[in-house]
Length: 395
Image (cartoon, rainbow, N blue to C red; front, side, top):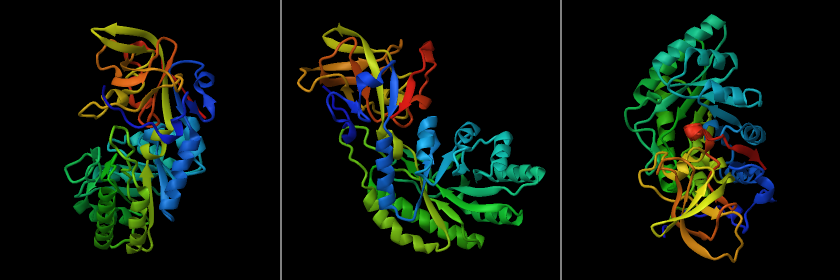
C-alpha cells in the first residue's frame, strides 16, 4: 500500500457531499468536474484577512471555466490572462485585466490595446511592437514590464527567476525600457515580478517577497519613476501529496504588509491561481470494470489522464505520488482493500491512483479525485484516443 494526499476538509463526508449535494444527484453523466464555489469564497476571504490593502488577481490559466469566472468576478480585483482566448473569457466581466506571456502575436497585442488591457511586456521587441500597434490605432497603450528577477522562489514546484528565461525582461535592462515607455507617451502600469509557483514553505515565500520589494525599489530609483502597481506574483501552493501541509498565508501576510511603505505611492497585487481554486474541484469518474491481475486489483474507470493529467503524475512531476482519492459512493463502514485506480486509455501512464487503500468497490461505484480545481481539464489531453470531453459544473 502507498500513501496518498489528504482530502480537503470540505470534502471529508462519507458518502461524499459537494456543495450540499450527493454524488448521485450531481453525476448525471460521467466523468464530471465539480467546482464548489463556497470553497473558493472561503479562500478569497482568508486572503483578504491576511493581506489587507493588497489587490487580489486571479490567474485564469488555473481554471477558465466560464461560470467560475463569472462567480469570481465580484470577489477579486482583476484577472490575469495569457492568451487572446483567455482575454475573451473575461472581457465582459468588468474587471481590470493584465495580459502576460512570452509569445503574444500582433493580433493579440492589438486586441489587448483595443480592450484597454494592461500588457505585461516580456521583451524590448514586444514593447516596440505594442507601441507601433498603438500608434497605428491612435490609442495610448497600458504597458507594464514583466521582470525576470535575479533570484528564484526556493522550493517552488516551477522556478521562474534567477536564470536565463523566455519570461520577462532581465532586471538590469528594465530601467531603460521604463524610460522608453514613458518617452513614447504610453501609460506605464508598473512591474510584474514572478519568481516561482507551487511553494508550501512560508519562509521561502516571505524571503522571495522581500527580494521582490527590494528589486522594485531599485528599479524605480534607477528608472526615475515610481511604479503605479507592483504585481508580486503568487507562488502559493496547495498540499497535493502525502506529508505536505497547508500553507500558512497568515505568516506571509504578517511579514509582507508592514514592508509595503517602501513604495508609498504604489499599489500592490498578488496573483493567485491554484491556491484559490485547486482545492475546490473534484473529478468524479465511474468504475466500469474491476479486475484482478497477478494478485493485484484494478478499478478501471471511464475517465483518466485525458481529463486529469496531473493526478497521474504526468504534468511536471518527477516522482509519481498519489493525489487524495476516495470511493465517493462508499459507506463509512465499508471494508477496505489495496487497489490501483486506472483510466480507459491504452497506455500504462493512465493510472489515477497507485496501490492505495480504499473501500471495496466495483462497477457502478464512483471514484473521486480531489485537488482537481486547477490545471485539470484544460491542462489535459482530453482529445487523446477520441474519448468524450467530460462535463463541468459549479455548485
